[in-house]
Length: 130
Image 1 (cartoon, rainbow, N blue to C red):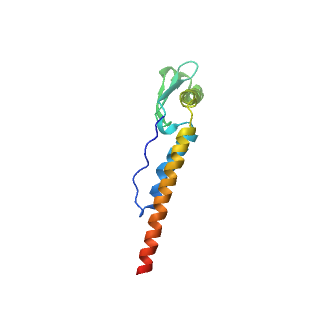
Image 2: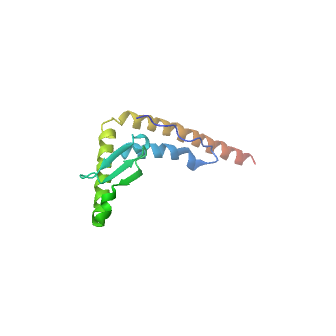
Image 3: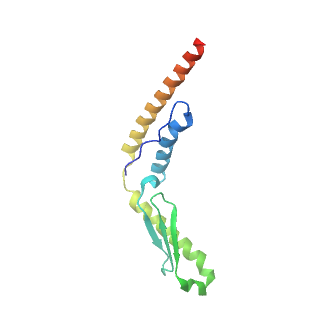
């Protein structure tokens, strides 16, 4: 999995400096949702099919019209299909090592924090001169 660079931010937007890095860490720790592959799952009878997008969110739900005959089976079929899609997602993202990616994020966060601190110090110096 490749991680994307954090969004550009300026010292005037301190929250934006680390937001992208935090999103990437959260994605890595949650199984790679930030850059996973789309996955799909079905219930045992294949009456419900669920597709998860690359971000791990439900992208589509398809129901077989035969479920209309037994509405009590609709919710359980959807739940089973979602769980199957999530399990498939874990299989495709759970095997990759994340140590190197977390190390890279740590280094980038240090650089961003250093830049932010330098900006704060420069602002304080400017205020002292006025």
